[in-house]
Structures are given as structure tokens and as C-alpha cells.
Image (cartoon, rainbow, N blue to C red; front, side, top):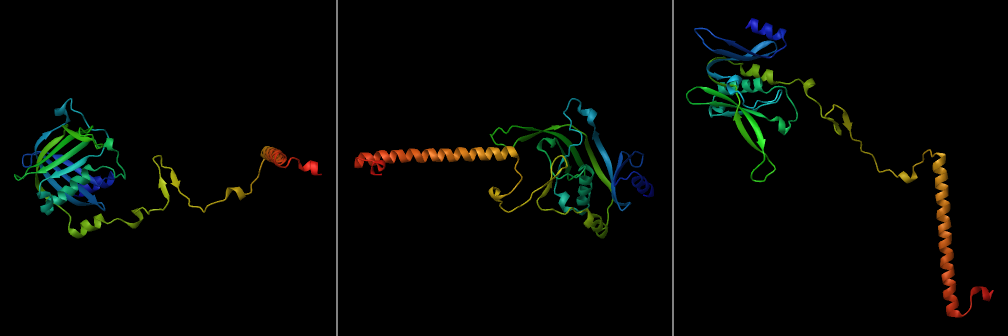
Length: 256
């Protein structure tokens, strides 16, 4: 334990996997994780059957850095406490870096872990390709292809943390919890975007510096508007004078 804790602390790693082979324990695989620079839990697995990537030549492979879809098959995963802890350890081992969002195109492989009644746990890796839904729906249909690596193993020995230590390991410090800020978000490029809520503003009454070109343009526009109004008034006056003469037989000028 001391050697594992020293190496993990030196390499700043909280997960470890050790493979070994000897006469007493052939094809041995030890998975574990640390908390506070001390071993939290370990599981010793005996590999019964293994097929690597070389055994699936020509098969499509997952993209580098993509996150797997995990599927645990079998009632024993939620009925047995030790199997629950092993499931949590496998999830912690395969989940990768935590992210807040996932692109649909990034879901390209699935890891299925089946716990059978014979005590053998079968781990299978499938390449997932999304194709058009034949029923015409917008949701694509996944097609699975075996891509490896695959492994059959049994649980030989295990050493899991106590309930109190496990609760302490899951506790998050307040400083690590991100505080939600209203009307503030970050885009894909890491730029901060904010939203401001202001009262309704009357732009017409706002005073501001106006350049000389705008003042001249405004004066010319006002003169043109006044000339158009004056022309319209003269035209209406002439039409009213014609109607008055047609009705009375004389004009207002004749009366004067």
C-alpha cells in the first residue's frame, strides 16, 4: 500500500491499475483509487478471457478523448453492496474528465458490463454509429459494432472503504462549488457574456453631440418639409377658391 500511495502521490493520480501474473494468481488485475493520498478502495480481478484491439482488425474505433456510454446489466449491481462499490469504481475509472455538455456526435462507443449468475463479469466494448431513423423521427438510431477491448473477469479479493470514509470522500468543499451568477454565462471560446436589464429609454429626448453635417442635414430637411407644407396649403386654398366661385359666382377678391 505504501508503495502505491507514494507513486500515486508523486504522479498526482487518484486512480491506479496494476497488472501481474504469477502461479498463485495468474492474469491478475488490481483496480483502485485514493482519497487524501491514502487508498480508498481496491478490487482484485482475475482475468479469464481477454480480446484486445488487435483482435478486431478493420473494426471501427472510438475517437480519442470521447466519453463512453456505460451500461450495467444484471440485478446484482443494485442488490449486492460490494457490487455497487465495484460499479462506482468502474464508473470512476472510465468516465474521464467531467464535462457540463456533450455533443451527440461525440457518443461513439458503449461499454457494457454484464454480471452473470456464474460469478463471471463480462465487459464488452461496442462502437456506436448513429444512423437515420427508419420511422422518420428526428432521433437517430444507434447501431453497435464490436470493437474491443473485451474482458471476462471474476472478483478475487476486495477492500472497500467504510461508510464514514466514503462519505468524507464524496463531500465537496464549498470553494469547489461554482456559484451561479444571474445573467452571466460563458460561450464556447471562454468569453464571458452578460445581460443587462435597463428601463425603457426615450431616445428622441436624449441630448447628445451632433456633428456639423448632421445639423446642416437636419436644417435642410426641415426647410424642405416647411416648403412642402406651404405648397400643400396653397394648393388647398386654390381649390377652395374655385369651389366658392362656382357656388357663389364671385370670389373673395371681387368682394374686396
